[in-house]
Image (cartoon, rainbow, N blue to C red; front, side):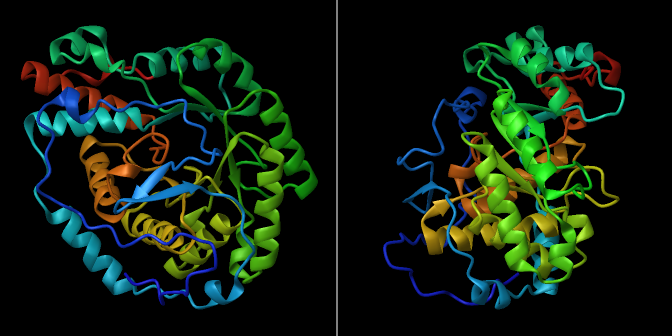
Length: 371
């Protein structure tokens, strides 16, 4: 894949360099590889939140919309496909290294329940799982008690924010709320903005917002920018994850352009999909979005997180995504502050793989309920 052109450095902006992936790095043991948990770091402080090949990057903040940049974006689809084919064809990590990567995947997970039949009790059970994502006996068998392993966040509808906050109190696990007429995002703009404000005022740490896909189809980049900028303002101190609905955007070029507009408008994260589309997170789409994040960081000196959501169900898939993140953006993005999986069903398979590593036996799926 190639996102066209290197842009001149804007005055006063710090520019990073292309990260290089060192495929030879392996953690010496499970605890060492997963020692970094979610910190209380404020993404909106003046301190760096990530780095790109050693160059510090600040948290993202809105910049003016650059239509020339958007119009000149190009994506080489065949190059994207070749890159992904080479990615999945490689041998994956094994034994203790695989266990370490899977524990990292858990720490970068948004446990999610977004069903029409959600209840307070289901949300409380999900929060209990978020606080202790794998069974205590398995934690002891793996010797990882000191990691205090937990997931990145619990994602719920606005109605259940208070329930989730209460259940997660003192855990350090964030509460995320979907908003803006999720999943279609077609309610009036004033209602969507008001919905964000309500969730932020209710105490949500993160807000997952949905864009109007029609703005992308029509090339209405100013309208898309203004919409996301309004969402950002309504979020206040809450982090904003912008859902592109990549399965609806038809082309990789549209995905890349929408990614840049969202970042210019102030997105803290860009997210592939709602999980409700027929096609959700895919590796080709993820590569395009990661390259956009990298170019944006190079040109602005600001870092944006990434969240693939929907369709990621196996431990092997999680390893593919983690490897892609490491190769494209580096270790700095392999933290819950910069990367999330939106995939609750993934946790059960990871638990089974970890139990196999610890005991030599695969357990039945019913032994690892999510909620």
